[in-house]
Length: 235
Image (cartoon, rainbow, N blue to C red; front, side, top):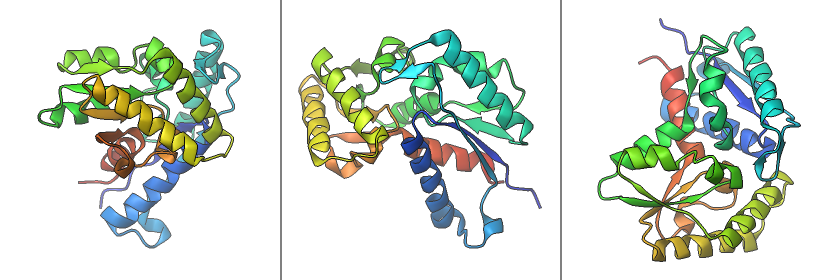
């Protein structure tokens, strides 16, 4: 019988999102794979970084942060992981560079999210809620353009508000006012033509659920959970 693969999680950006991702993996194992006993679950190695090269906007010191990512991904490799996932959208800026340093696959959450958007018939314009550096680095913009989907971004003021909300989550504070602020920002993007929205920072699904939004939501944590388990469990 084919073994369940070992999942490597390069986390810590931020710790709350990493913990939520792990919880979602366990829940999905129970729902989709009838996991009950310990042996029913995949082996998972989590390296929760404490990166000095990042700050509230995302990337503070690019060279240092890349070095920290490389160190983390090598740690997961030597721990026996079969593949690696990064539950942080901003970290995908370094994806191609990280892939040069290991032989096992590194799955792209951003690519899988764009694929999910492309599979949705009729969605030609999406809004993006993300860290400031995810906008600056065009983590989603280029990939969405390739599949013919227009991207709507929040205003500069709203981007700053999103950054504050991300910081609240990282500090363990989930606030009703933050959810209301995100809904308000989504409504503005909807008025600008957005037919759906990507939760492009993995802290944000801790604040906003799909049912809260006036438009369809692509939850990047859910998409990564589904992708990781498809890779881990044998067909």
